[in-house]
Image (tube, rainbow, N blue to C red):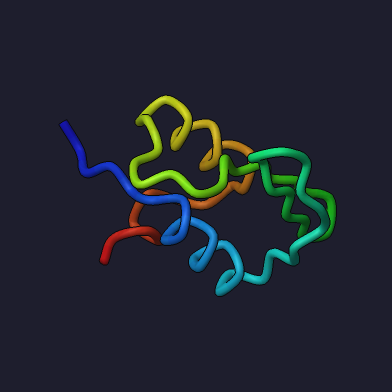
Length: 68
């Protein structure tokens, strides 16, 4: 099984890749870059792998961008 990432780490990488914070509703944070919108659950120590894959799909980034 691959490594699970925290929401803080995922948000840092998204911002580094040019995604801009748009809004937050409850525990979900929305980021936008041109025509792509990514929603990330906030304040989680570990994001489930399926949710992480969804974030990758929404952002069109590869898993290698998130390696520490």
